[in-house]
Each structure stands twice: as C-alpha cells, then as structure tokens.
Length: 470
Image (cartoon, rainbow, N blue to C red; front, side):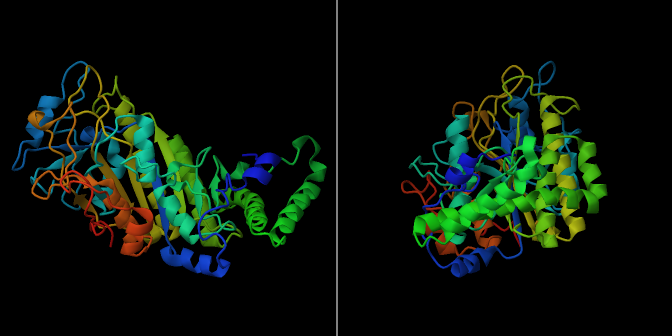
C-alpha cells in the first residue's frame, strides 16, 4: 500500500496515530518498560461486521431447567425461508461441556462453524454468552462505535478501548498495533502512538516513483534525513513528528520482507491459507506473517495487537439455516476455517501459548425471525480462543416471547435475574487484566470507567475475573 508524501509528512501517525496524547513526552525508556506489561504475547481482534445472528451461532439443543429450545423453536421457522437449526445438525463437540451455566441446557454450534468446533473440542475456545450493553443501539455505525470505544452511554469518548492502553504505554516511535484493512479501526483510535494499516504487508511502501526507480534510494534517504532533522530539532512536537515519521519509514523498509520470509520458510501453511481462498484466511495470514517476523527477530517489527474484520452479517433476508451454500453457513465456515488454520499456524510456530483471539460483532439479530432472515438485535455471544480455559461462560439470554422487548432480549445487571447479561466491558476488562496484565484499578480509571445509575440496569459493578483466561 503506497503512502503519499503529504500523508508521510502530515499524517504519519496516520497510518501511524497522532502526536498529541497525554504522557507523550515521557522518557522513551519508561514508555518501553511500560509497554512490556503484556510481555511476549499477542492479542487479535476479529470483528464480524454487520451484526451476527448469535441465536443461530450458539443455539439451544434442549430446554434444560428452562424452555430455551422450546422458545427457540417458537421464534424460528422451518420450511421455505426457515432458518431454524435442527437438533441433529447442530455441532456438539467433545471437550468442555457445551452447556448453558444458568439452565443446564445443552447447546450446539452452527454446523458451518466446524473449524471452531474442532478448536472447542481441544479446549481452545471460550464462549461468552449474552454479551451486550445498557440502552442498546440498533444502528450499525453507532453500535460499532460503542463497542470499539467502550462507550455505551454515548459520552463522546473519541478513543478506542485498546487505543487508550496503547496511548498510555507506547510512544510515537513505536508501532505496537497492525490492522489488516485500509483504515485505523475504532478499537485502536488514539493520538499518541503509531498504528499500521495494511491490506498486504508485501505492498506496504512509500511512493518512490515506479516509472523512475533509479532514484528510490535518494528519495528514501531524503525522507530519512527530514525525519532525523525533525527528531533532533529540540522542539517537542516537531521531535515527536520526526520519531513517528522515522518509525513509519523503517516499517516500510521492514514489513514487505515479512511476506517473502513467510512464503519461503512456511510454504505448507502458506498453501493452507491459499486453499481456503477466503478474505478472512488471507487477512489472518498477514497477521501470521507479522507474528512470524516478531518471533524471528525481524528489525523494526514489534506489533502485539492486531485487528481483522469479515463483513456480510447484515442478514435481513436470505440468511439461510444450516445447509452448505447458504449465507450464514458460508460466513461461519469462512471464519471457523480461517481461525482453525491460523491457530494451527501459530501452534506450529511455537506461539500458541502466547496467543489470544477474541471474536465480536456490534450486535446480534432479533429473536423472532422475519420472512427469510433476522432484523437488528441486541445481545449475542463472543468467542475467545487460544490460550484460554475452554468452555461456556455467562448466561444464555432469555428468549421467551413474553420476555422480549421489540422482539429483542433485555439487558440486565440484576444479580437476582437468572438471565443476567454479560456486559461486553467485563470481557474487555478480563482480557486487559489477565492477558495484557494491566492492573485492575488502572483499567477502571484509564480504560473502562464504570457507569452511573441504577445498578440493575447499568454496568456499575465490574467483573474482570470471568475465568476464561488462565
């Protein structure tokens, strides 16, 4: 991906965040020491863009002590346009019990998720049910921003929940995060450190004028001289701009080589991603290339946080059920296969114990089916996989018709409610505390502040020890 000179000089922190965050001018040695709170680990965000149908992702097989399966059958149709999943086609992998903690009902995975089911059988997947937030929005853009910024009360927080951590612990000369897309995801929003956005690492470069490549070395040296001059200026802002410019230029020197190194040294896994032939597989392969570069000691490659996305989940019509070739099946198949291959790749690299991947969507779909699909909904499951305590966490939402509001499940923090919701910020907080190693109090003060209001309806008591991480 080419970057214009204007972008380089004016936006380097574009591709590399901005320059003016709190604590920016602290000692670089202090910044780097703080950055090591995560240690030798990786965190990958996989965003299912469009609102994944959670009820047809983790689906009741039986009633247990409640009526989950009966309520599911009432809400979802069979026959032409029906999307109900039968108990025989749902996947119930071996491994940790796939059971709702509240009702004891047997659960199953959508048949398209056979790749993820294989990882679940190995104890490598935690399913967190009923994830949502107070006063939910059914707007794609608004809800996505809420999840990315961890700002359910729409307080105008303009930084990402991971971005707040990056800004606190990394400086402008660092590139701690990579997004495999064309723009910085909201999760990484901040104005202090650098975030690299690439579609393919082999194409990350500066525009050295391909029609006259003989002067590329001179152009590169001129850019580096400008960065060094700014860095040595003695003026704080100019110095920080120079640091970010230099780190971005060095990344442009280093990142394309990750592609060749990976293809040359990991041809069998490279082919496995090719065989899948999907965008999610290709994007996760880019993450694998960077991780392999970090593990191999590639210069100027230090990323620990990653983001990829897969779209297509806005299934108002023609959603399909559990048959190959249908829309929801194909989406789940793509993501499940890609995650299975990516995990196997990381395991073969020897980094599986350093890896956690979390999978989320901006909302679920409505419980009651429309003619051939599902409309915008509220609470749904999240997946966390890798170095996890596999199993099911959180309560399945109450899907009884009489309990729904506008056809959707109701968010609740009432501790006496057997269907109490999982606030998605508790999942984030558990990741921050137990994987990124951020102190509990720091998470609350700097990353995920609690809500005010009715404790039965708002997130006023946190749970950052959900148990899905060792």
